[in-house]
Image 1 (tube, rainbow, N blue to C red):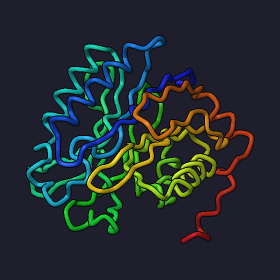
Image 2 (image 1 turned 135 degrees about the vertical axis):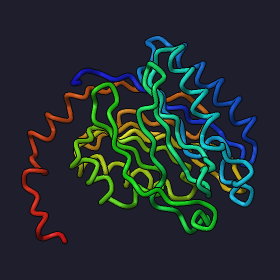
Image 3 (image 1 turned 120 degrees about the horizontal axis):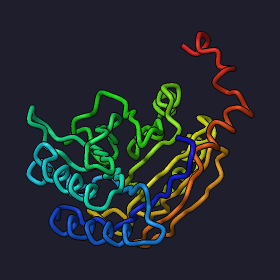
Image 4 (image 1 turned 180 degrees about the vertical axis):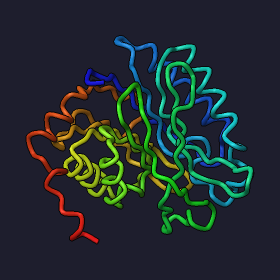
Length: 266
């Protein structure tokens, strides 16, 4: 696919430890997003929107096997004929433990991707309460090669580069990225876009959650590193339209991938 994609990023407040309220809030914002004209092709949610960082209770709060999450989004996508990258949720695994997991769905309600956060953030004790994922998040969205990373993952450029080498032209990044590290957030996301010559679609949260303040600034960044759209620090739906043909154009103008010398990097 080389056409345009209309994006709607749901930058919402998340109440730590309150899945019911978070679920209701998410539904209201998604209903708002799909009612807009023009209607978006893809909705994107932030990280851990179901529970927030209530890590001390995450075992009891997490969605068992992601069943509630998958049932809701599958039905929503079928009803509204929209793709959804359902942020990430705390998911209790049948084999034990809890993961921070993205589920993505196509317009027909079929699940097209699942990715669990690979890099756990020790400063927020994620490693004490969550299981790390073991596979990169590579998938296809309406014929577009895509990748997914979660929040802290963007500090690891080798993961984004692997996704790009496997063909990804757009990188989705749900996050709960806190104050005061706005400069890191913007710089890292733009770097991932520039060095991999792909779109970066990052959806952050806002407000206070579990004693931590989150600043929003969800962004859509093009393969040149230009910020096409950026939210403020309030709840909102950030809209943008991207032309996927730009990825091949940029990669043709500056042939980074052809000029790599990987035998010297290891």
